[in-house]
Image (cartoon, rainbow, N blue to C red; front, side):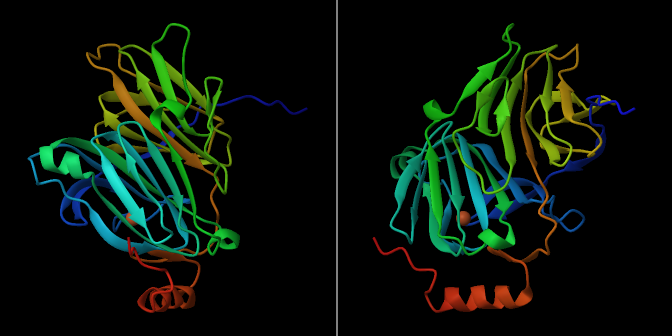
Length: 297
Ligand code: FE2
């Protein structure tokens, strides 16, 4: 006889972020990659930039640079970012907006503070996640999904103690509008003090939580983690549980991110992530020869 029970995942580890400077000198918190923890298949990088108050004229960005072989997911919480790319796209991202960019065969893009925001200064806060592409999609035509905040589905529990913004996957009955190449879950949860959340995450997914604000208790074993920490879950259950401690004074603000591992070789060199060294050499050569295009508008 077989029994099928849903079990809560335990915590496999807690990763601290390192602070680093990106682009023109934007201060970011980065749980990975770092020397001791390079990726979490299928995820390659997570950066939290800010929250930081920038003076007029001091906002920094990332000028023209290439990508090939994976996806960059930008989620802006505060401030305004302007982007342009070699495919002729141009747009702005404001608070709550998401850009899911599938670089595929390659793009050159820039991610800069929006002009008026840069002039006046203000608070900037956002996230960038890198999602690896499977071998079959690494050279696909670049694709953009730009979703303004109001089009991103949200849901909440009946008592309102848990709210979620569904960027990818499904939660509390709401389904994401963004399409992903492989199964990905990307959820932004807010929990009021004393609230408990339980999210189904199928066993084959690698899953983690990144804490944006507050302190929480995570997993079957209620491990404590806070601001800037990444909680890795073991693949030992089909649900992820997290809660605010009963004595919490503030809300808990977290991202729950999960994906089915690709289990393919990862060869990365800066903004290129391929399966073999030969493909990396090709990417560098293609970029040098202008085959990834340029931003000329
Ligand atoms: Fe980029």
